[in-house]
Length: 410
Ligand code: PLP
Image 1 (spheres, protein in one colour):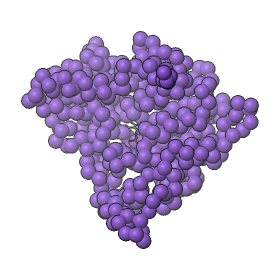
Image 2: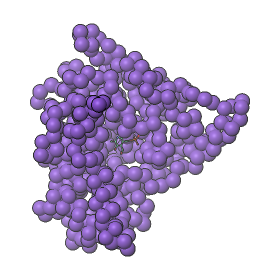
Image 3: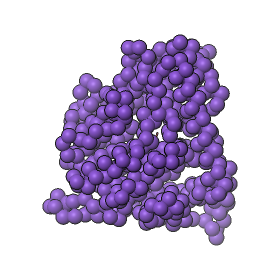
Image 4: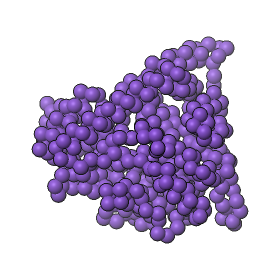
């Protein structure tokens, strides 16, 4: 009989969101008339910007014409999109990233998981705690961990707690690590990293020969001019970091699917025999072998995100969600809840009131207010006693959610 990958059996009962879905479904079956408001999963609600839709329509028409029809495109993405990304996201901010360092893909979830293909199984891996669960689960699946303990922490991974006690700034690892996942603006805490914090990490990576996997999926939500948008704003970061970006949350692409990964030419790892190896060429090889490119229609739509109209429409979307975050934050604070994040990020991270655990609070909010959020402990042991609310929703739902929330806790 065929053998399975036993590492999958180490995964905890399920990914966080299926468990939330199960509890919500049970509640809805028992309370069919309840108008449940979901602020759990971080999925966008507002429609695609007009500039993007128009570009996609035009691309569909091109595909319907023999002269302009396209088949397979370059696996790394069309030059028009890679050049637009390099120019608008990096070069116009004075950051030296070139088009051939950009790999267009169908999502940062896939990229942050797939990147492990090109790294040795024996690397020591560090994640913050709480953390976007995909980083942990993909390490488990690829055999880089032992079993989970009762708190859900896997043997072999280095966990760096981020809580109110350390102001959500992870301490540098006590013993050396080779791969470090950093996510800023952070999911789930909604907090950001200053230039000094990122510099510490870049210096650490240089001193230890480590590589930083920097997830900037929420970069567009940064409003504070002092906060870096890219890790490459830090001198020397191109020698030690890969950056992941996504159009899911800024341009409303969670269902449309487009993202990119920056793999600098200067970034090196080493072979088992100790020779230096270019990470860029490994990722290029991996990408071309296992991925056949994002559809032309989607890439044309994505390119339009960088037009003057597109930029303006995206800015309006971001401002809309940030205003939702402000309403959530201030509405909760007004009834004495301690709240973090939600200023440079679409997530509000709150302390659960009293002694309630994250899941207790989840159940209470669902039963009494018909509101769904995400229990902090689902993101890691250090998330216990916290709770995440997403600002991705309609204004009416956000206002209604704030009122219901206030009624439950006051
Ligand atoms: N990275 C982080 C930190 C996220 O929170 C998410 C989605 O919620 C993703 C990546 C996934 O992005 P994508 O839709 O591009 O796969």
